[in-house]
Length: 347
Image (cartoon, rainbow, N blue to C red; front, side, top):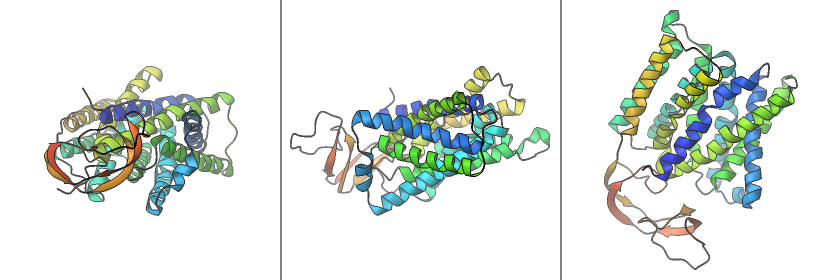
């Protein structure tokens, strides 16, 4: 049975993976910039309703962040909420949903490379093998060898989106004191407002109520709920591994493109899918276990009383899982683990 972290990431992947096919159904003659804005406004609106229901206060949670966390949050909003969706929606406009879905696998490659280069996450040989296979599959689409190795404009835009989301994922994992729903709501409102205003500043025309409603609904599920689940996964299993499970999303998108849009992929697109499926198979077989040491740590997050959480309470914390500030004493042990918020040690 999968642990919670992988399940969060897989459900997030399914919701996000179908978004290119659904967006193709509503985009029509809509400006890609306006579509990007409406998708994230839908995310912000849907999650704000959830926050009202949960009685969580967005701004009080935001004020509790340290300056370096606020800067990382701002970077995540710009990269993941503004730049990445703009690249994606322009790519959707000119590419097929099948092609776009496959290329979104490169988000996991970008996330892992950044996690390894900048945050020094341990990446095992199976993960590297999987990433290389994903890159080969993406190259088959991007270079379009059946057309004489011509670069696909749509593919290059999706590559840009994946790079920006890779940066976003690694910045987001370090804003651990902010509840996932609050974090996703802030990103939704910030990115949605900016891109919608930019669309009208550039002369975008009004679209039908059905297109607006469809875009907001897709945003609420594929960007809002999906992002909340992915942030939970980031905190459970780290950037590289969360993005590995998230890489299943494009295959949900492929199925949606075939059944909802009736697309007919080329033989090269199917070949790309085979390489990417092989890459995912390699990724999912990874296991990481060794003796490691936990340094003293004080922080706040949702938790249960596992071997890493053996602290006392004053009686006001409520049933598990619960959230409160707590202290971790030094601990040395060995077990299978991922680079979550408790396992960011060197190797």
